[in-house]
Length: 382
Image (cartoon, rainbow, N blue to C red):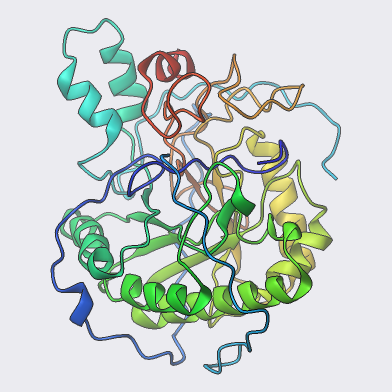
């Protein structure tokens, strides 16, 4: 993957920070959601943060080439600034009580297995105790519904909001470290239907396909149009399956495409439509400061247009010290965890700070790609 891109490394059946494993609970025979108009979800609460503000994958085989021409799904209507930022302040406040921490993850496995490790207390308090996203990176139609349901029902029972990441778009990562996904877009559409069937009826945040829009420059114009049609359809299916779901589309990050260019692609992908979208996400698996991402996301939203309620969510998991000057993306040294995950950012048009990439899961330089690496986690947490 090019240095500008968000580094998303897949491992095993689930990538990113949290595993969502489970047996098939009847996913094959689940009823599919109808793609009808969904009402808008009321905005998540935004209140001023406390005065002590916090700062805060074994790859799949390449997907086979899909047919050259694919009509859009006939469902419903379809430079980074050079200014430097000071290091983000360190977090001293507890994690949000509204975001869901799934009880199974690589970091929690490590913490439970190493009670006597001198790094355990710091890694647990600064990483493992915080809510984080759950990734679904494998193309497994038969089990996806039951595995998504296990996460969303857990969040509902706890009275908290889970964050889930569908990551199975065909030709993801343009054949790079996280290559793979569904074999073609028709299969992907079916997988999304099954994913949606597990969403339940409670609040849920969906980070839809990291890099799927920002990295589309590697595709032909026809391939981009086909992908964007599937993404727009995915947004409609997810929101129709659960009207309380909030769906965010890929805006890359502040060091990548100009806001107007990114917004043009996002509009084609359905991100400006209330039927598909609640806004955009940025900085997944990257390091750019929260201040840069806020400015960039607002510029993208301005260029995107669409309903006034569209907002942004920002991955703050590793951006506490900003991006390295040399552009290094693979476990760069001297990075820090960023702002605590929260739904109360106190920033207009910024709906949440999230940990989409788990701090401590390696990009492939300090550990095996996508695996939790305690030495790296400890360095980020100090």
